[in-house]
Length: 370
Figure 1 (tube, rainbow, N blue to C red):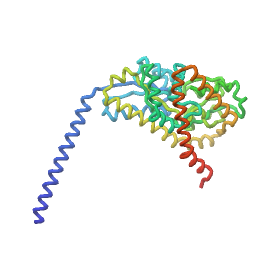
Figure 2: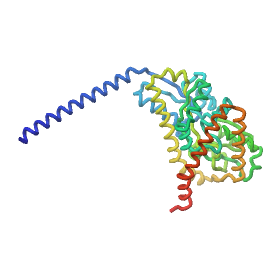
Figure 3: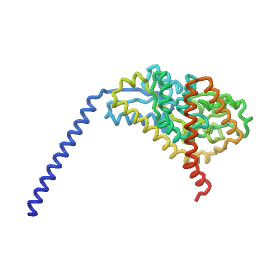
Figure 4: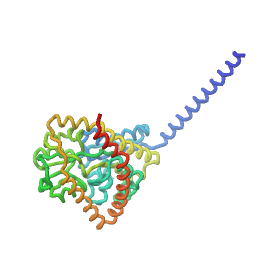
């Protein structure tokens, strides 16, 4: 009896194994057929970053690597550092003209084309990285930004975020508002507009050019990102004083900009792959920065960097100037007004919530360390 049962069970098991193997072969065959039916696509991606920065340039590389891996090498993107194809601040122009199929950059570099592009990256006293993602993905932000980019024959996707940045390097202490008057500083976006209101002589140059400009005295101050990247650029060797917080960049998003013409030619499967890869880069980058910046800041201080906080006077004046600029832009530009009002409502709502959940917890931890 037991022997017959054993034989019967063995036969069932063998049949099941054969069926599973056949199913697996059919699935693999189907997958191979699906992949083989898709075209080979080769793109180029211009970026605004030096390739020495494994974090921010790494966001572009993440996209390229994931697209290649998910398509079995059928869709590849070659990344180029700033200056290899176009200068750091001309990536959008290159994508718009079709010089490259896509680019990795920051939308606020191009506010001269449309001031509302600032919201795609960040604005002074705006959203943290987590809040920015909430606005983009679930608060109507991405749809609003894609509507603007459509004017340039471009479609964009969030593709990285550095988290809250530092407040820049200075070759002298900045104690009062008057100390900013006449200072030459590299700072882009609406943060630069605010600093200009506070008396700063604002300049906008690419990241790879900051060190030489600061070291040679062409500028007196510069902001870039945070301790890890700033140390890699050697900014601590060109200026002694490191300020915080970076009130103009509480959670800056970096964009994957894609030529609409090139996008429309992609098979749907490749479009979805590219979107998924961009989201992975967008979520991976702030995690990487959080893991690296704390250690780098300690190293900078050990090397002699003097950490300083912006005074309340400067912070209050900057916030006042920022919202004056927003209101002025809204009164002059219908697109800016539409996005600003929607963004401001979202900011108020998410800030109220985060006061309850995250900030109350953070305050307790900072005041009750063990």
